[in-house]
Image (cartoon, rainbow, N blue to C red; front, side):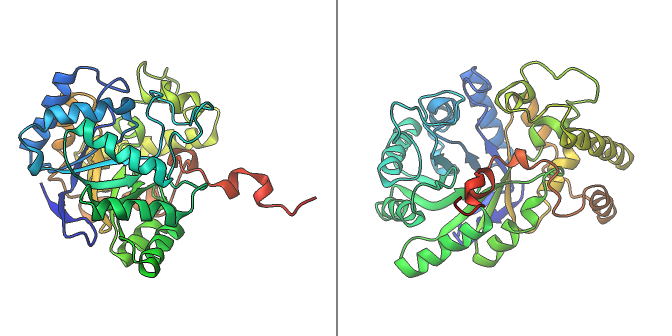
Amino acid sequence: MEYRPLGGSGVKVSHFCLGAMMFGTMGNTDHDECVRITHTALEAGINFIDTSDAYSSGESERILAKALKGRRDEVVLATKCFFPIERVGQFSRPATNVNLGGGSRRWIVRAVENSLQRLETDYIDVYQLHRRDWDTDLEESLAAMTDLQRAGKIRTIGTSATPAEWIVEAQRLAERRNLARVRSEQCIYSLLSRGSEVGVFPTCQRHGVGTMTYAPLAGGWLTGKYRRDEPLPANSRATGRLGRMGVWNAERPEVQRKYDVVEQLSALADEAGYSLTHMALAFAAEHPAVSAIIIGPKTLAQLEDNLAASALRLPTEVLDRIDAIVPPGTRIDPKESMIPIPWLEDPGQRRRPR
């Protein structure tokens, strides 16, 4: 296992981070197996674990509390807030309580206390805003997190799925308002989604922000799970929430493009002597801006297969051929990023009043 700086935080993290999104009702309901997954990851040298209060309505955090009993100090523990946690698998605020979620001081302070209780710890190493809250002033969110840091409840502030311009704005606010600096950004990055290379990565490198990248296997696309003209596997992400949103709809040209690219990448992996999964994980960890890639195994077998790629470095020739198949900066399907941009989604943001 390799250990890399998490931006300018002074903390070093394993370049493979154990993601716990699949712990609980969103994935694996066997708590004992989830604990074994965690222990196996620690024994393999992983010292970085990422979860969220929204994963299985806090169940993921409770499972990690069991897994980390007596081992808390071995781990750099990251969690997130933003989404309402009472609605399993639903990432929108209930109409009956419009303040349940978001980036307000009111919610952040409540959310961190709840996470500390569920995790059975008195501090969180990396506390992240799961999404940019467009309805809340960014200074409001950062000031609340700064106060929590100064109170010793969190160690480092992070963001997730944040556009590059807002990463810069957070740094400027920290300078002007004497707030804590954001030290990590969690962004999507894989062979099928290289958009972070355009703005997020260079911005983070310039400002001393470490990146934790998620979806290195593109929701299963880079495991060979999805094949053209074959039914989508049951109990896969394709039949879950993203599937219901139409992300896997074969009539979409982006989906057909993915099938084409995955076929070419599979052929390259076979020729080079790798599994497609291992090549994808090694690629995601290759970029100099990346502090850690987040692997999110549902089973112990998946974890063990992922760990087998932790020592793999792709040769230049393979990386060059990957660039020819999926050019740098390519984002085949913008829907995958799950970053709502109001001025793109709302026509009223782009048109003068009539």
